[in-house]
Length: 214
Ligand code: ADP
Ligand code: MG
Image (cartoon, rainbow, N blue to C red; front, side, top):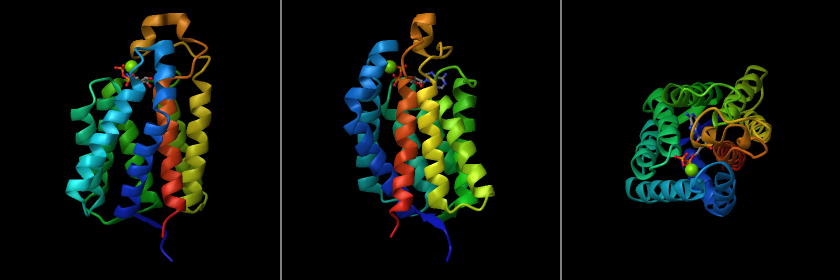
């Protein structure tokens, strides 16, 4: 039996992420009101609604086409920092997969890694800067470790999700060094980073989509 994620499951992931940011919109906004400008929930919900509308009309058949469509739509529909950053993540993922209809665990890992590298290239975040990178980097590391240890795609994705949640929680005491929250200096400590919170949703929905594959 081959352990792969096909374009349909990638689509399910994107839809579940859209549903999750819609459901958690007020919470994401509340987090951003503490250390930013109270728009992260609105930014993510607007961006993912635009993505869902685009996917309804386009029906991409390959992983690269799907992921690039997601990325381009986020870049063009979200004005805040998170639009270009998440947009770059998906664009780089798509540029890495090639025109394939399914990915195995190694292929998904390579693509996720390229996405994270794209976020760093764009936003220059370093570990501990209190950004989405602090949830994303441990998630992708955990995914790779699990796959190297022989875990199934489903177990690796759940390990990534657990690591993203731990990374999100670990942003709470940090002082922000990137983005709007950095303007607050020491006063940014004591709050979760909103982008790390949405990133935990991104990996939770990936794990859910993969474990629910037909
Ligand atoms: P804005 O900051 O423009 O209002 P959002 O509120 O939608 O945009 O997104 C804020 C989130 O973006 C932050 O919580 C942080 O996780 C992320 N972020 C901001 N700047 C950077 C950066 N340079 N690198 C990585 N992530 C960043
Ligand atoms: Mg904001």
